[in-house]
Amino acid sequence: MKLTEEQVKHVAKLANLPLTSEEEEKYSEQLSKILDYIEQLNSVDTKDVEPTFNVSGQSNVMSEDTTVPSLSQEDALLNASKKEKGFFVTKGVFEEE
Amino acid sequence: MTQYEPVIGLEVHVELNTKSKMFCRCSADYFGKEPNTHTCPVCLGLPGALPYINEEAINKCLQIGLALNCSISEKSLFERKNYFYPDLPKGYQISQYRWPLCINGHIEVEDENGNALMIRINRAHQEEDTGKLTHIGRETLIDFNRSGIPLVEIVTEPDFHSTAQVKDYAKKLQQLFRYLGVSNADMERGDMRLEANVSVGKSNGHPKGVARSLPNYRVELKNINSFRFMVAAIEYEIKRQIIALERGEKLTQETRGWDEDKKCTYLQRSKEEAHDYRYFPEPDLPELILSKEKIQKLKDSLPKLPVERAQQLIEMGIPKNIAFASVVTVQRADYIQRAIEYSKARGVDMVGIVNYIINRNIYARGVPPEQAVSDYQTQTTNIISDQGELEKLAKQAIKENPRAVEDYKQSLLSSGDESKAGNPNAIQVLIGAMMKKTSGKADASKLQGILKLLLEK
Image (cartoon, rainbow over the protein chains, first blue to last red):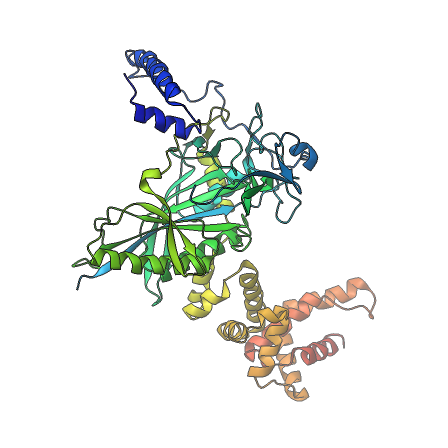
């Protein structure tokens, strides 16, 4: 299964990755190979097998509605590349996206 | 001329008032707090952090679903909704898609003429809120205190045909959230947010309310943070779309916002850029299995809802509009209930007292319900305050209620002290009996004095 250039561009955009045209070519090939590999799984008969979403085998793992102290503002912002008055700062985003 | 009919579906987001966040134990009481002081690795989306489900939030989501007559799914899963935006630190929102907690409900709304319409609820699912963005010049400031606050999304089928119905729906949902005590549902604070899908279809030959084919496009009205603006945006959109269709233009799927200065909607995102969320089950959260017993228990614990409380008043003979006005808030409904019970014990006209409280807006004045009943009595009845007449009544009551009299005398004897009062309940029974006899016209305080004199002779 060969991914088209358009499909690779779309996937890159969804993953927020800026790709050069060489990279697009390279990943197109690699992604296609991954899909081929996954495709092999389709040859297994899974007609009577329930889908597995979680391998822990657990259910209803929940916690009580109680609070614990949060990080300090200073700690929360420790890794921010830019901060101001207690906020994380990023370059402007507008609703148009 | 072609007749057009608006087709509107709504998505309502409501923040739950739990103590802690949806998937971590940070305090959910974030409003007005210093930015980024209610965060931890989970709600900041730091690598390796693992979410944990808040059971109380799940219960509140289920209560909402039950109150909206939904079926509760026996098995429910969380999924990741993937997209990039600065308010979403993980790069995905934990939400529900294919296995929501509550599905297929319904709620009745009214239009401006009081005509009832059943709105189908597609789903009520659990998710988490995002961080708050503030746009300043070329920069955007981010506060993650809101990130991870439990959020319930309620999606209707496209069953609305007018903004009056939309208004009534929003009002009823808000009332429901407050009755259930699951959210403050304050629109201005953003506890409750509204999104609308609007299209117009030709309604030729279709009687109102009959299922018909839907238009092949819809315009999403989003990021409108006031209820009034949303109604204005829907009304504008209906007009804009009809004009476009009349001109023979083809309308397509898109997202629009509201420009309050220009009083018009504007394009935010067209279909070609529509999001591809690539939902998949959240591997960090095990599935939820909801037993029938748990669901039944939650159902049994639901408080009486406004429609039911109004219905009780209507059955007592209270006019429909007064009945619904009486149950607008839980507090008001409880107030009215207390006034009714107090009136009942005194033989005061119960329909009259409710009308009096609502029409004169007594509740808002902070008068206790018992006082309201007394005031109403004074205003509406010719109080019997003549000593002779009251004595006659008191003697009659004593004769007709030997048991209460006995109770009173016993309590006097057992106290062994004549200066102490006898059983006040016994006196109340006697007063109640006479109030009934006189339709509440007897002067209660004078009666009490006379009864005491007679009984303690």
